[in-house]
Image (cartoon, rainbow, N blue to C red; front, side, top):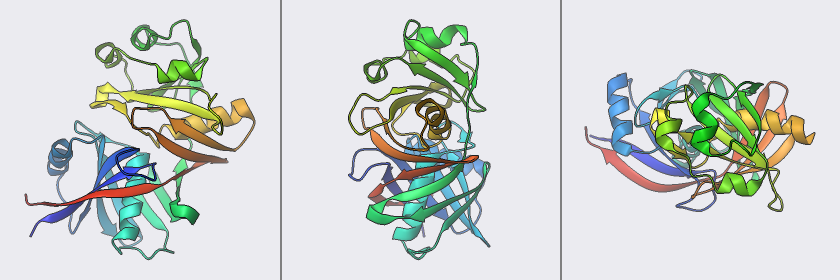
Length: 266
């Protein structure tokens, strides 16, 4: 008998938007090479694998090329599937044991799910030689920082973020998981916008990146003087993320929609 695999659009309330993730709930442990092969076959920015444990689920995330240490949208998709498919009752907290420690998710009103992630603030740094050239923002960058995963670049206008056309070959030479580019929002109702590029790990542009908001939220909280914000990731698919900064944690809020259910026969 095969394994059921789901595809979920995360950080959106409608299908074919937000960030798609595959979710596979394992009846027993599988080896890393098999999980990597499945992720490559799914060819999505992330495939999540869950294995039930005494106090929740073990959770691992794979791009088509590598395993990663933190992923927001595939965690959101995983929680959505656990509730939808009856692995958890609707009032139960989803608990995930990951490479980044314990992550939790809870259902809220209106189909929103709020996840509890570690803050990953960026410290100011010099930009590597290829970085600003690859993005084409050498004359528009206001801040360059880096956390343990990614570079953060603030530019001076939302239209710059939306209009980016990076040189992915050059950007892949930058030594980091990925690069987030952000600005204060000019669109009504939003606080900040961003895009996220990670060609080094096989994802040229990630549609909506929850883990990036673990960096963006504390950055914009300090810039804007507020702890609760509404963010938009301005990729072609696009997605909305609610963020709350609570001490050393970031609460990430999003919606999710199931779009596909299939069977893995290998």
